[in-house]
Image (cartoon, rainbow, N blue to C red):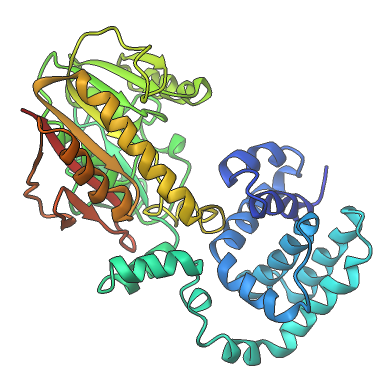
Length: 430
């Protein structure tokens, strides 16, 4: 077993080096930490990532010269110590002492005085540092400078809302399987168990709980009555205009939430669930089994056609790989991991996916293009460029009470205690 702070420092160091994400790194090290410390490990990693831009700004002020890349574990330790002092109830002396002790575990005794000195100086000089950083946009917004700049340019009137939502903790939202139970009846079941819940504003299937919990302990979870899914993602199934026996492709389907939702609404659908990684398709199969629905699950690349049997699809859902800038509050390591160059590459990939999948759609069919991004470069701009390349494609006007109308599709921005950031465009083949 290793100490919880040593594990957190190792995870955060790899994230700072771009060598993994919280979702890939946390499970690897969790089993090396005492069971009672695992919730704290998650809190330290998620919390430090959530406030990383602000914490990094403090470190830049407190350290005479930048640490070398090979000492990213010490950089991570400084961020971790500051996070505990600022945002947890851990007593300062314990946070400081335990964090400094990790330098010995990392076999870097030279850093003991550095970590101790930086954290103690922060305790003494915090008010001066805050004043010094008043004009630092990255610090004030708690977002990387490049990302804050793009958000300010594209969403000047909504900037404060986006920043506040991204820096908050995400709501815990369920999707009700209305073939099993009505949303109203399920809310009543929760109330009977003293679980506070309310219906979502825009999805007719959604329920938001006041407190997050283990969904497996909720009534009839194992029987497929409910699934965990954000409200914005729940909107996709209705946009597809499903009807019995349609042949449907869910491209980029993992972890299978939208696949399951489609089949809940219309079990007779012939659904193909596609994803590039066999490991991720395990989750798709597990979700389908729990919901007691069936789909053809295929490991394949949506930019290629070698997996396709040649029969056209009536509907295609393309929930494309993206920067995930609409779900930063759920994946706060995005603040440290994403770069402007990566957004440009993703936009190119999104265009390739559209180009390859479009010929698989039957004339008169519908393709729903979706991302959990709030970057126009990945959303409206991608669709506009695609329409310019494909004269047989038409973007339908979405009349809805959610999101902001764009030249193509609608953009949902993240909402505190509400839906995530999401983009939808509905394309029909002439």
